[in-house]
Length: 180
Image (tube, rainbow, N blue to C red; front, side):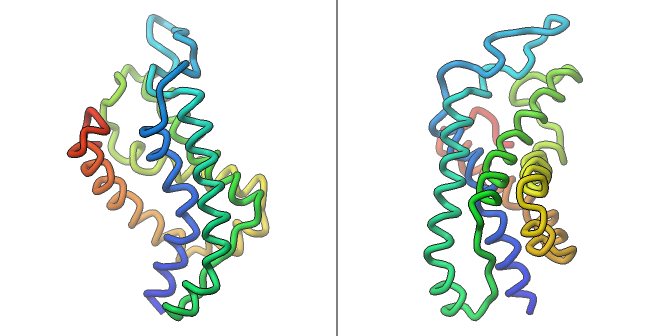
């Protein structure tokens, strides 16, 4: 039962976990804020680009479609229950993850944090909040039935751990300039 719970929770979040990683790899180009400042500080900074946001969102949606295709085989092979992703949920998870990260960047600039500065908690869960909120707006019944309270607990505990591990790996590979 615990394995099925954890597998279902992480599976449901995969389309939200991938977009920010893809954005790091595919980013660059024109910043979303176009260099605008408020109070002498950038709105978002150079790290939030249109290309990265589009690539991350498309990757998350594409992953959800792949997961839909392999779900029956994976669920049977491991004896677990895994959700499928309606397109609206896939878009909500992927785009919501990107918007959550962008919102956190905006907040960090407003409180005087520079690009790359750590804000524990916010850095690990910003995309989760964005993903769940947008998915709730786009696919409410799917979100409420998929993200049960138990699965939400798994997501809120596992995500910071996964975030630390993946960001440290990206830093060690030279893909990020800071390990958080």
